[in-house]
Image (cartoon, rainbow, N blue to C red):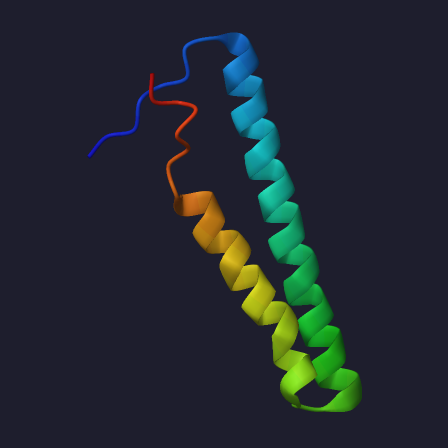
Length: 69
């Protein structure tokens, strides 16, 4: 399935902003994971940021119902 293109400039800017925010959050959480792994070793709370990053990644892959009109 192909995704529909955003119809207006406002929608394009919103989509770009959402992608940037998601990428920033994933990068931040991966950075926290690496820092925690180096300083504290591998424990459950070390992997917690990776679990959150995975959910952000899944959210970014789901098609938005707003774009389908």
